[in-house]
Length: 76
Image 1 (cartoon, one colour):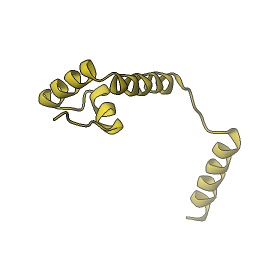
Image 2: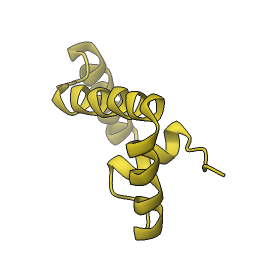
Image 3: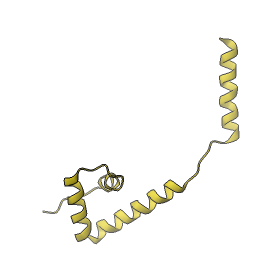
Image 4: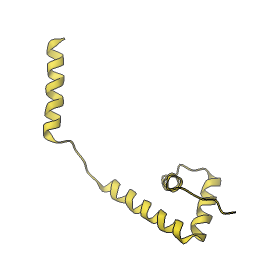
């Protein structure tokens, strides 16, 4: 019987968080199951896009945090 792998399993495999035995089973399943391969490719592309994102907080948010921190320092 073929083992069913979840998207979480594939994500762990992608980030090398699986055991050697799990790696072997996933690689075998990827070689035999085109739908699993497609799912893995979608996950892999999404991970690549995420690693290219550059996020930073809005200036207003930073100023509010600084204002809050300053207010708490003055009152203590």
